[in-house]
Amino acid sequence: MAETYEYRVRDQSGKVVTGTLLAENEQLVINRLREMGYVPLKIGVQQSGMKREINIRSKPKLKDLAVFSRQFSTMVNSGLPILRSLTILEQQSSSRIIARAVREVRGEIERGSSLSAAMAKHPKVFNNLYVAMVRSGEAGGVLEAVLERLASNLEREVALRQRIKSAMTYPVVVLGFVSLILLAMLVFIVPQFKNIYTTLGGKLPLPTQILLNVSDVVVHKLPFIFIGLGIGVYLLRRYIKTPKGREQWDGLKLRVPIFGPLFHKTALARFSRVLGVLNKSGVPILQSLEVTAEVVNNAQVSKAIMDVQQSVKQGETLSKPLGRHGVFPPMVVQMLAVGEETGAMDTMLEKVATFYDEEVAATVDSLTSLIEPVMIFFVGGAVGLAVIALYLPMFNIINLIK
Image 1: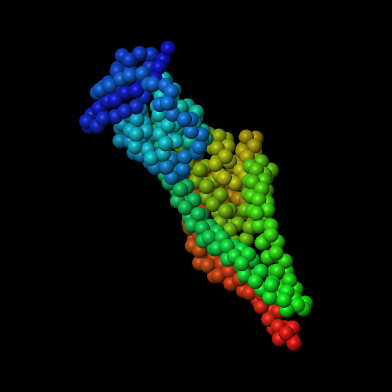
Image 2: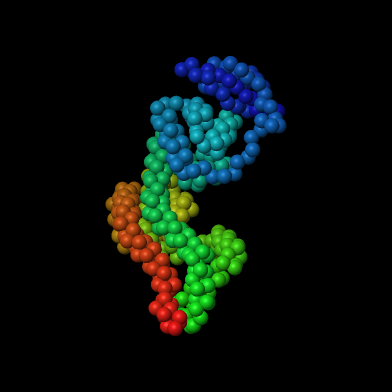
């Protein structure tokens, strides 16, 4: 029966390396380590119980996966064996999730599995895009080139997400700040004015009366408001996770003012880049479309891609069914049509991806400059309306006193 052995070895540079191997006996472990170019120092059966690691189910950060992919690509391109590369990456990875997955992938390879098959057993770390590209690289004998494309694609995806995050951070912070200001006014300031107006008597203007009523609700039912908001957010998140909810939510994201075009261009950039990388790596077009639909991160676009896949499966070209879906602009459709006619689909997809990457960057820059005055206007308007509503009765105070 195979057992897991812990080992401590020295590599060719003199560095001490530790790890685990699954083997029938200790001698097989020694032989395997020597084949990998290591000098065994200590070998023993791995202890169970407290030393056993907890199964981690979380997903790693995309940035950590991009770093791992670039390092893996560099090592393989430099001629290092895959097993040795994985051993090094396991030790130096800053992500415990990736390190654990790499260790298990290495163990699967040592038991005779292929790299892609081993990675497929960890879908939360290596998604279908990752596995499909590695499998195509293994089949075509171009794993080094495929790993490099994969690393570049992940790095561009990280950069794209950072651009979107930078565009969203400012309005979210400002809205939170305004909400705190208005909440403080409703809880601490408005009730003071309410006491004054009650003492003076008289009929209050409608805006003032509305503000006082809102303040009264917030002061006396604030815990219930927070509980209600929490339940509402939870139910919304649950609904968004359903297929129908996700499709409606993503459709709303594409139509929302100001940010809608940004989300649309982001989805198109991701579609073009992923499909181009898969096509260039030799993945069949039907599988490429299926993988692209899974990773494009927008249910509306994913649904359109799956419809296109069905049309292609029936013998149509790629560009013709694309033109039947409004989420794909005419420029994308025409460029892909030219790519099909000239046999340069990879080039056209790369150009489309580059174009929309630049469009996303330009949109983020313009949003940053546009959002600042809009937010200032919103903050000033919200606070100003509250102050005006509070001071409207002041104009009648003299008459009330008389």
